[in-house]
Image (cartoon, rainbow, N blue to C red; front, side):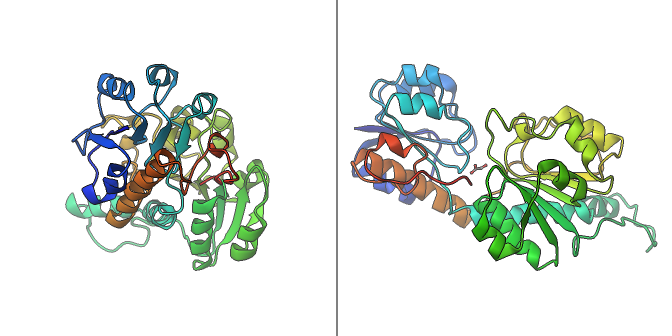
Length: 332
Ligand code: GLV
């Protein structure tokens, strides 16, 4: 059997694959595999280990007659046409759980950086604009005691909510279904999205990207938010209509945005969002701790090895292709 790994990962992490297959690795850590090379490798692969930068679509699947499994080193898998994989009996695996807490930490890091104007503060010092202590110099928004609205209360949303208790926050959430256990654990209360937008001081997006959730937050939704509110997106860029967001921020219709993800990644350095003082932007680093990225690489490899070895992967988003009784993976 043959497996293609689309980015350089630690040897120890991909070791489990070597017992089942000959493993070819795109030996570049920083840059995505060129599309033509991915297609060429897919054409003779039984398994692919890919990143969120690699598109697994019908074109690729049509060119990959022996493919049995696609393992994504990410919890989100909107880059993979899961329905097309399922139709061909190809298992799609992802890496939930191992990144939950690290990603929740990052949500809080950017939320607080925006609320308390940390980057603006550092820039003010570096640029020699810190003249003296002044009553309203870099005055931001309080986090403690505020209302947090989480859109998508999956694993990461729940981990964000758990942290909010330490800040004495009121916690709302909007989701397609209720989450009784998370409510009991965090005190979060379910509301409609419109009410969440109107009442929250911090709106945190943690829903998966699907055709239905694309541009979930557009001009109308931004208009419902408080002028003092901050929008936080640590899920997928296309959940937000970025053009509408730029307008709302520039017109100060909302107070700020803290963004880890963007409609187009990498975000061009001359993007209008980056010219706005009330934006905190970081380059899709939600799960980027050394330990967590290593755990993700290992899990992605183990998932793939399990499918190719005829066993059960720890996480599979279309378990129906495996047969047996493996439960459907819950959303992130
Ligand atoms: C990162 O964005 C992930 O989905 O794991």
